[in-house]
Image (cartoon, rainbow, N blue to C red; front, top):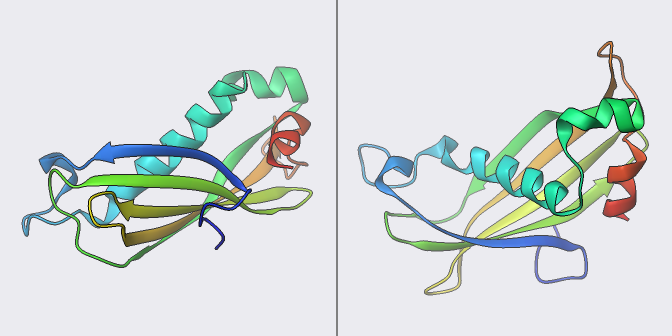
Length: 139
């Protein structure tokens, strides 16, 4: 994973952990990261005038999430400010992977690493190449 400030970083965002993001132990709930991965990806595409509902009409294909991973490295609690970076992990003909790094802003501790893997699908749900609109942005 190369989300270390390298040239492949596509987007950065800082979030503040809320109580709603935590479990009964007062630490981040394991699934709380996944909506942020999706949100950062979606907003990055929106910043480039790419909207999921329009992809079929514009490109004949869209992308869907195939797999996600997350490795938890340190405890995260409410009010922690977290910097999230999204970078290109890999790009293929019919899929791409985004790599994420989550770092606590106050002490620069890496708290999590994650991936989001997406695949191209045509209107009938069959495998298709990643739409050129997206592929060009990933290059």
